[in-house]
Image (cartoon, rainbow, N blue to C red; front, side, top):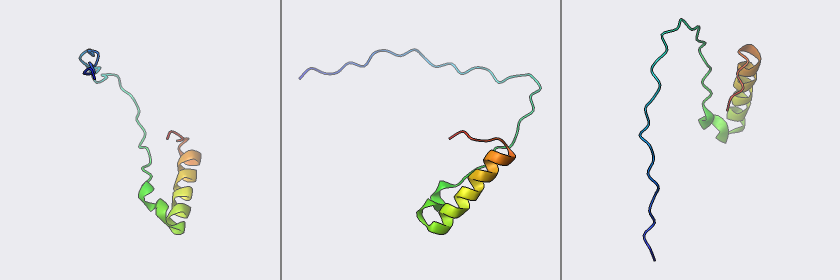
Length: 60
């Protein structure tokens, strides 16, 4: 069997931090470790609902 050769990838250079005055919002942190219990799922559902309705946060 021939050895697999991975294609060469270019070196990643991150974009510099913006110097613009940008208003940031604190995004809610939803701890998914609670999902294993019915009470935890209920709490997660409430947190997700609040995040989506109060802060328009719906990115997964």
